[in-house]
Length: 433
Image (cartoon, rainbow, N blue to C red; front, side, top):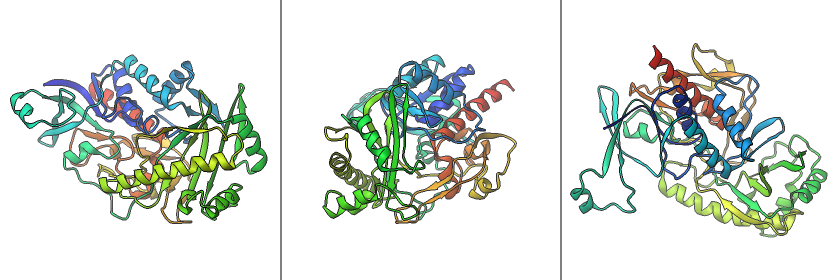
């Protein structure tokens, strides 16, 4: 059995930060990723930019290293005082570089098959030694060593859906009515961005919604629209006209947000469509239907942009995310269950892994029912990253131990980076003590 100090399952934002930090501290680290690249929401789900989380963040070393690495290869921009404007494709390369610098071993295209638990501790996880396109029972019988067991002192579930925790039969906190709609992001290329930016800046004067900035000759922009009536949206007449003319379906306009992308001067990234029909993210049938609906909506939205937005006349769909943007799924029961009241009260802890002011941001599948509650700085304790059931199982990312509303604040990428760094430092401290 191969043995490590730390095994991290899931190479997304939280998993990469954990592995990198532990590796730099000199621990022997294995990072297991189901896809063929790292990055999770940034790369697979096209979730850019990384949102700012205040001026008093802690455990930012990995985020800073990623910014520096991306800047060196042309995949980062600083816009609206936010360094987190990343290029999704170049992020794959940057993360490979960072793992190599930290001496982290990475297994791609790898899934956990089973787990061995002894006395409330994970002894090992079982993975396939070979990449098999199909399961072959005869082959399995004839070759007893197709699988390999991986042992470690500490295991981290950074899968988002808490897949390792599920295999360990841990207790979870999610309730059936605690759901948020998913999104499927996409990119359009061939956009005349300067032309579109000039039109957009004149069309929408609300700088809380629409911004345009020339950064070293590269035009960056951002704008949005929702069907909620909480404010007057400049783009509303265009969407209403498109629905009337059957260019869009009514639900296509429930949420619309677009940005430029670092290092891609003719591309626009879309934080939509948001799929309101299917919200049970743990059911294959539901998410399959969500994907089918989302891609149909993407086709309509792209056509809408070509018709209504100057500069999009020759634009085309260049990339559709290969992973849904899931806001909430399983949440493990940890040694501390972090709550929305902790956020609102700014409760302080002895061992915080993050400090943030990202708002309580909970999307709804109903009109005018979403929540965006501005808050002051709050802390999340490391005990919320510790399983209550398995002594050497830790979690990082959206599946940590929180109530539903608190999870709506801590789930964003910057917070996930901090969680991972906090865990990596914690393991290093345990090894030194």
